[in-house]
Length: 289
Image (cartoon, rainbow, N blue to C red; front, side, top):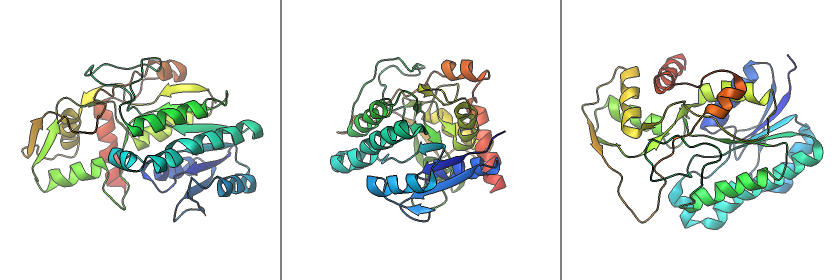
């Protein structure tokens, strides 16, 4: 196996941390870029410093995990959402195309609504309900101006260990102290843990496909079902959980985020993880840490 140099943008985030750890464990040379506590402390909206980093390191692959994922923050500061979620993808994709570097843009699943637990393929109709979805979709289009680039649609879960709790950290903390929580029956995803995600992404980028691929759990499930499976994997009670439905607040949210993984499964030749395998993986890595 040939070991390569990979720049991970957003290396201190939930996904970036695990990508850095896993890809390094395989013997690759990983260069982390983030606002703080990274090999290069750079704001991704500063394209001049980004390009300086790329020129200095001369990577084989660049993976962009950076995004403002808080939907309300994207609505409040639309300009910042564009400068972080969209514009860098175009700058990086163009640089990679000119310098024969493989570019991977991590996208989202926040494009579908109103069809419950449907599994959406890469070619299904997109619904851009809010600024987050608009900026992430624009990033996809800018990325794909490079014919050799890869866009990954996904919904990731895991542990970050600093700053605000991730969804999984919040859910586990609430379950452990039996704090009352509402669990949504009508919000569907195909969430995959960052550990399985990193392993599968490595298998994928070794072959350098281009275009759009869904990388997610092979199953679609409600948030309620996810939390119940999470509780089962961690041997926790769900007596504090109250099933409920999404509220129609002022911010329009996509609620049917299930992804069809047949394309990537056919390409790689194996099935992607089930919900149980996702929550069991979270349990395993929580114990390891």
